[in-house]
Each structure stands twice: as C-alpha cells, then as structure tokens.
Length: 271
Image (cartoon, rainbow, N blue to C red; front, side, top):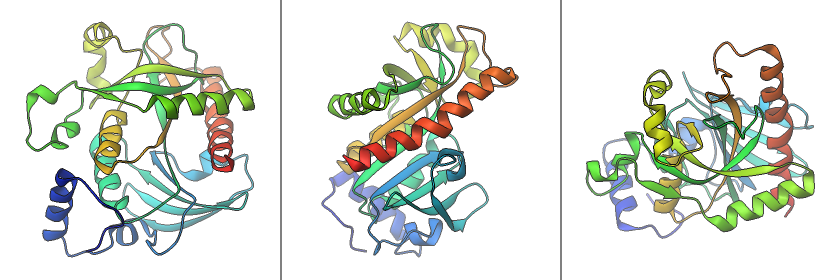
C-alpha cells in the first residue's frame, strides 16, 4: 500500500497493523465508496448527520456512494465544488477508525468536522456555533492514539490550531454568524456524563460532546489541519435537555444546522 504523504512513525505503525490484518488496499473506497483517484475539494466527517440535513438549504446534488449498518459515504456537488462526505456513528472510536483509515488514502484540499455539542454554561444558547479552543480527552479511544495505552493520557488536553479558529471566526463575521471559541470535554457516555458534571466543569470545560479530542489527535498524527464546527443542541446549565427539549429549542438547533454549516463550509472553500 502506498500512502499519499509522509507520515510519522506512530501513524505508520497503526496503518501497517491495519493493513496487515485486513485484506484491503483502499478502505475509503471499500467502506465509504470514495475513490482515492478522485480529487475532492473537501472531505466532511459528520457523526450521525446525513448530508441532506446539512445542505438542506443549498442547491446540492447528493449521491450515496456506499452505505453500511451505521455509516455511509456520499459525494456532493454544490457551487462548483466536489465534496466527499462521511456519516459515521457517534462516539470517538467510530471517528478514529474512519479518519485513520480514510485520510491517508484521500487528498482533499480541506477537511471539516461538524457535530453537535452540549453547553455546560449559561452564556451559550441552543443553536450557537462553537469552535473548540481545545478538547479534553475524557474518552477511551484517545488512549489508543499513542505508542502505548497509558492512563496519564486520559483527560489530556488536545489543542486546536488557533489560526484555524481565528480564520473560521472571521469567516463567520462576514456571514453574520457569531462563532464562540470554547473549551470542550470529550465523553464516552451521555447517560453517565451528568453524574460527573461538576468534575468536568472543574477542568475549565464549557461544553461537552463525544468526538473532538480523538479527532484532533488524529489530525496531529496526520499532520493536517481541519475546521471543527459545532452546534449547541442542549444546555445542562440552563435546563434545556437533549432528549425532551421543546419544539422551539429543537427548531433553533435544526435551523442553525441547516443554515450555518453549509454557509460556513462553502465560504471556507471559496477562500
């Protein structure tokens, strides 16, 4: 297998083991239907969300390339751009397996991660758009992204590139979209997170979700930069729940997802 760029020793070991124990030379194509011989202007990684939800207000042509039991790959044509789009299941492990198997094979011009986030403080509203200043790795999958599994890496702070965030914030200003930069905590369990909220808050975290720490660590291994854009879906500090929220709050969340994600992505691609 010939990968598309130089990689560090740890990533090479990870991928060598993957290919040694799996009879596949092209995971992007075999699993998601995305061809490494096709140039994509962008690749979007989106836990849980189908592209129709993100590009609802855009005149996008969306083609399903391959579908599995909890994941799917799409090709999107919109505004003259060709975009690869991968819907994964939620949680860090699914994102890690996707990113590390696919991105060494594909060479998109830009990479986007889009997802939902729960606010932990009252200064955020449903539908607000956030970018992570950093993500605290409270998930188990991140522990496997080092030479050895070591508890010292649990809750390690994984930083996002501040220049990427600043550029995104400036893009948002031009579109009239306020983007807030916050510290995010990455958890493995929605059900169990509430028991530990005070502890999580004591770490200086403002919001919580399930994938960004592992995703950002994967970007470190790949020596790549990605735009990470999150939309507030609930707020435990304000008493707005993820399950059982009222219609008004649900509409705020859906409206932000359906409008702002596509606007920001396309504006970033236009430069």
